[in-house]
Image 1 (tube, one colour):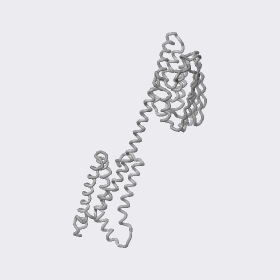
Image 2: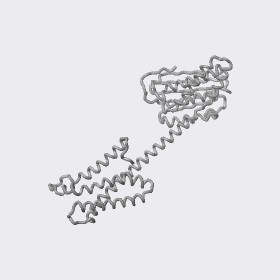
Image 3: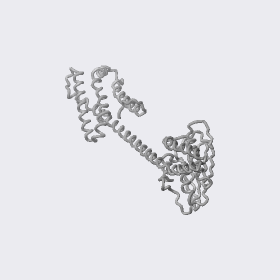
Image 4: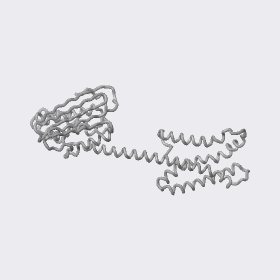
Length: 353
């Protein structure tokens, strides 16, 4: 509830505008010319105004100290009792000041304190309402931030579940290639290092260039080609230009990884088809693979990452801007993702290999 921060925000400007408007009207009202008698206005300006200015101190004391410290921590009862005590103090203070400033009118401190009763209580009420509104707004802001932090934590957890299972398989393949003297050992190692760099560093960003995600996808597919050689028919079609669009990292790879997980092994003549199409504002990504009869394809139990993980990430990051269709029959499993891409972050077109 601090008004005196280093950063000038719209909220702080709005608060100051309210305070200046309130006290501007409060102290300008006596100077409105309802009649031609200016003597009492001079008296107000010279003798009554100095005492009345203590209402400003009351306002800030309430909004900047009493409400933040007592209302939030001690409760409404302690706060109201304390506010009443402070209001009585200011009433007596204004009574003493006006009795001294307006001497020798001989009306006494009690009379002037009584005259200050309504203004002080009115300022106390307005400042309390102001403090309560700020309290509710800041509470709502804190709840929104907490909700965002929980969502971010959930997203981080979902990202951390991306399966490293294929990395161990690739490492085993590298060992085999090295022992057999294959020329593919070096390019496989390089591609694996690029994948690891992407997974460990770049995938921590909230959004990345679509070009990088596609490059990661290409490297992954090439590694799987080397690993399975002619045992798996891998067909890839990539069409369109990323045009510097951004996307949530590691969003498409679970579909491909899931296809290799369930589309090989016990499957007779395994086939994996990957189709990525891009236009100016949309991404369509389809992965199709043969499956063994009776297989359950909705979750990768060994790694903990599955389609439910991707669904949840899409719900959090692309609400109302995506569609995920999953179709399965006795021999084929197909996942198709439609995604509405955000505004391009650049103008340079980058082709997809």
